[in-house]
Length: 329
Image 1 (cartoon, one colour):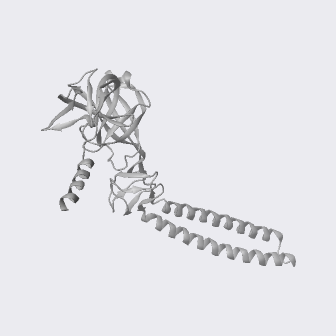
Image 2 (cartoon, one colour):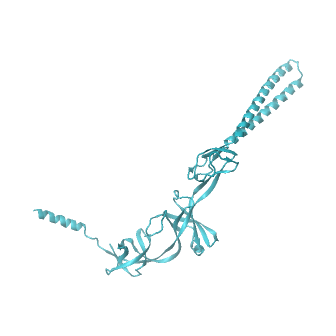
Image 3 (cartoon, one colour):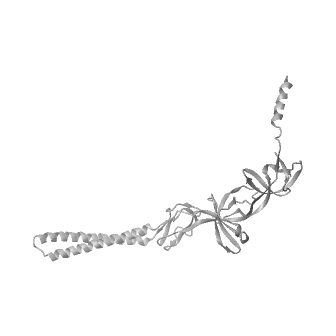
């Protein structure tokens, strides 16, 4: 009874682990872009300095290299001690003029009452009115001077001119600076990659070309996973030192350093490519093989990996040719 129960279980296990039927696939020969590996350097669209608007001493500094800022953020404060002294002097002058103005107002009101009673001449009232008007204008001018000093004090706040990331901070707390001196350099406007290619490829680079952007430390497109794709958005019309420059727009470069270099593959021509599905490749003892329709295992040298209409494919550099048929799982 025990043997009768075990035997069907073994049959079910064998039927579940039976190998799938192999399929015959012809070797694909097609024209594909010839990708050239170059280095792209991360650049920011704008590098703007945050400048001090007044001279003085840096009393506070709220950013350092690498700090992310928004437009209008206060990144430092500059204080000029002379402004506080000048403001005190203006306040004292305003108080003196205000006291003179109050006295002139009292005398003018008294003279106006006496003029109504015929005690004083009208010229006396006109003289007092003139003095009152002069003091009023002096008070207005002093208040305007005070507003200028208050504005200068407020301009001691150094503001970030644009959103971005701080590249350098050439000053420290306690530094004495002059008006217009930069407090920090800010990289803003987003990042892009700038490529430098030999001039023999200048005629093959076009706006809108799709490029492959490698991740940090990536050296082999056939083994490592790329960061993503980008588009050529600008080709410079000048060749300098035998190289042509091109700018590539990439979706996300936020964690890269400005000036950092990464590997980029850009199409420079068309070439005939022999390719097979990635599932047809087997590796034994470090050697890659494919199985022909006749059952022969052929060693091959692999090239770049790519996506062939949704199917992972591999370029074959050596070992196969047009007309060969493979056996794939």
